[in-house]
Image: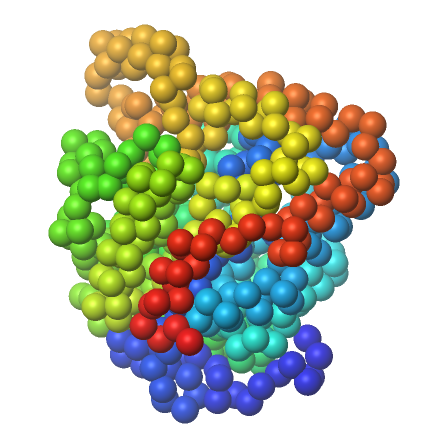
Amino acid sequence: MPDSAVPSSSKALHVEGTRLVDGTGATVVLRGFGLGGFLNMENFITGFPGTESQQRRALRRAMGEEAYTRFFDVLLDSFFAPADAEFLAGLGLNSARVPFSYKHFEDDDAPFQFKEEGFRRLDRVVDACAQHGIYAILDLHALPGWQNQHWHSDNPTNWSEFWNQRQFQDRVVHLWEALADRYRDNPWVGGYNPVNEPADASGERIGPFYERLVAAIRAVDPHKVLFLDGNRYSTDFSMFSEVPEGAVFTAHDYVLPVITQDGRYPGEARGRFYDRDVVEEVFLERTGFMRRTGTPIWVGEFGPVYTGDPERDAERLQLLQDQLAIYAEHGASWALWTYKDIGLQGVVTARPDSAYLQRIAPVLEKKRRLGVDRWGGSDRGIRHVLEPLERLFEEEFPDFTPFPWGQKHWIGVLVRSVMLSEPMVDEFAACFAGVGPDEAERLARSFALDQCDVREGLAAVLRAQPGAS
């Protein structure tokens, strides 16, 4: 990061009791977005089926090396640029959670050997945010061996091997030591979020690993705030008893009825009726550990998905307003998921008539019809497939309760995110067959801010928040 971009240390964040404060002692409530779909890609954000690694392998085969390289270089440069940081600041936001995959920093066939380009890309994000007074929270979103069971850790299976393999854990410690060394003196890096949504099925390995990881980071950087996700996708803190110095345990606070296309708010999901009172009750349940330990609250992820139906989307904006009011009442910082996408959650969205979305339109339609995306999708088109399986497991394996959310969720993940997604990867790649380098660049530019639309209703809600300017 250029020296000219580094402000005074008065901006550096630290923990003081229940508050985050800067170097002057002033309370800082973090308000921002997660930058999903960028340095860690997700299927519902940019439209591919399956996982990022599956997509990349297939596109390299379909496009050839030169066009493939141009496409991803331009996509990464366009998806979050200085203009995006300026836009976030214009919404009155002061932070950005920056998810990234370990694969930007090392290859699986060359573990412990860093790739400088990954650090340079992260530097560019941090610098763009700093220039507009925005704290960057560094979030390792995809770990080697997969820290959870889902696509967003680049996991093509349903198994999390990170917790079972010492080498995977060693590589993450090594990476965070390097990141801490690089950013320890940069006050605009507001903190480190070392493991996104861990899901240790045993509940026995996450605590010891956190102890080891925190000690390793603290040996290099004694001061940065550590934002530590709880187990079971950052909803379960039962295995923790103490908070490391300078650490904030973080909750993810999605409201079940409105993370699919079909739900309503107020509305029912998994046998519970959600209105504002229940939304607050769930928030208090998920943040009970923080309040018992007298530490700050940071909601690392939350937010509804949008449908395109004005009535339903008005309900979802009302939910968002309810959540933001609850967070303000309890002094909670937050990072809304997610900033930019192809229309599901982002405040900035690729235009429907963009070259990119026009090219992948047949795959998007098929994904919707088959409910391939677990996040924001619907299984209504394949209930005739799922219902016999659900009945079979209820009858034959009534005591089988797979981690993390039980039988029906497990079946849905295997059928939709694995069985149906995998053959669609090549269909997605076929949309790019014959694309040359220049066309690849044009397609990738579809995600540049000046090529996108703004979800004005969402932007208006954010501009109206306390502290926004």
